[in-house]
Image (cartoon, rainbow, N blue to C red):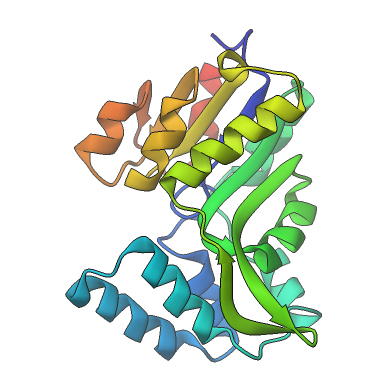
Length: 214
């Protein structure tokens, strides 16, 4: 299988980041943790749609400058065990590696991609005004959008879905799995996710995926 694969896309939350929300981790660092906890409570009790959750999450960051300290906090984000080493091995083997995430914005992805030397990085897109986040959302990276993004990445490289693999853990990765020649449900959140993937892995270490690619 791995001889056909050229591009591998990783989810962020639950895969590269060992936790449910990298955005919440950063929010705690800049004094916005309580607002995120309140949002999580509303998500649990009010059955918010994904788009509404992203919209309300964007409002939390209104007025924040995504420079200096914020970029440094992103680069210092603790990752899942063996994440950086695993990506290095895959890149050394010739794979193009990237991240497609529903949980963060482009302001996170830019320094994150620099930190890990990613070939591509896509996420929600938040609005800006006068160098600060405007509290608006311009693009929400839902499950369908993840799949569309993957197809665009492949088209830009003159590749097809037979050359694509993905690793995710949530229901919003199922559409992404659907356009993948090979997919891994990494510590999947439910049986539906596991059933949609080619393989399922339960592990604390990301290097457990290497047997499928090296």
